[in-house]
Image (cartoon, rainbow, N blue to C red; front, side, top):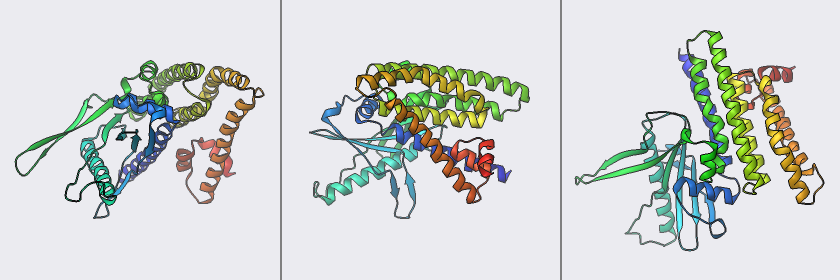
Length: 349
């Protein structure tokens, strides 16, 4: 049992790293998309050309050398004011989340106060701790998640302060609702919503035949979600609300998540061609059209996109080969690269 727990802990850590990487891609798209995302998440009204964006430090070391790492800290600077935001991404409901949010907020406020003091912008005898505006995005459906995370700070003089953090229940969103709120960068994560249901089926004690039937139904639902997401992305591209560079990154995220789901919970090879056909049927004509409008030779821009995807695959093969040379086991290589067991064994040969 101890070995199973260790394996599960290792797997959860790898999945967390993967999710962190995906979030960093989505929150670092073009400036306009990032501003639209911040406006949607925090009910702001920033106008892209009038502000600057900075990404802040997310790793803090205490006096006891205890390290804590947050997900995303963003600063938006206008001509007259600076705004600080902090976003955390969660899959599972965690009772300690509000405590961690307080720690993250406090460390960022301390960092900010220390910086102001060092630059002589505030008197040393008057410290001001400015917490960033915070939000936790829960990706997977969970009825136990409240609309707000709260804790009470009881001071020695008897005064009490309530500390609240807003929550976004991502599972309640659809492609249309994300589009309406102009949170285009979060569209790829709709694919991620299938993970919890697939994991529940996979770990249940149902007969294998029933598991296969239920999993097949989930993959059909996943395909419908991908289809709807791609259609919305196509319309956004047509209306010039998403540029090709952002579109490439968003498509890679969708591909990355579906690779993970298919490799972990299904037969990827049986579904890969169908998903690729969806993508090409929607985007290849649009890319050719854009290339013509820009006066480029037809296929040049499309070739660039396909070339990047092919290059990504070749890069993953090199990573897998190096892992094999270092003696890593095949299941670990499958987890890290997204290749199937058979593909890794072929590389090994």
